[in-house]
Length: 207
Image (cartoon, rainbow, N blue to C red; front, side, top):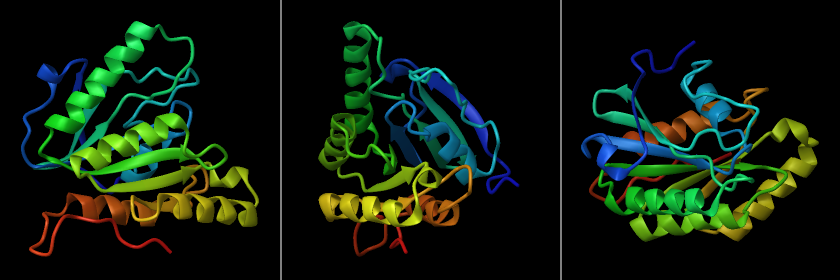
């Protein structure tokens, strides 16, 4: 079941000049390679193959734009932190991400995808720094929660929430078991709503 029946791929961008027009509202998804970003996107949207999944970390090296509804977009950012990639490519990735976060007025939220077993890597912290510098609210998904016993997963979540403080919301998530899918979808919808008079958009409180 697709929760966004009108969702469609728009374009892939290798450089800022190829980004779609900067209007409406868009929510970006970022995560270290092999953290389950594509699976999380597919689960939240309710489409099996909207974002490509791959057994090869780092395959997504472009900024991919999808239309969820008129004036509402989902942006799949390049998987980062992958191994066996030349420094030139890493520098290009950094420049592309810097241009994206600095230049997108339509960016209203960021989903940070982290493997619950290996959260808050240096790459995750870089994404948080970019989001903070642009004033973009963040919602962290601790993916692959099915890989840990429930108590261990909850402790990992508590540790991440304590370290993030007010910088981001956080929740457990499993694409395989659909754990946390509804909460993540609510966060996506909150980010897509226009800002009210009281201030910027924020994701809903997690259970």
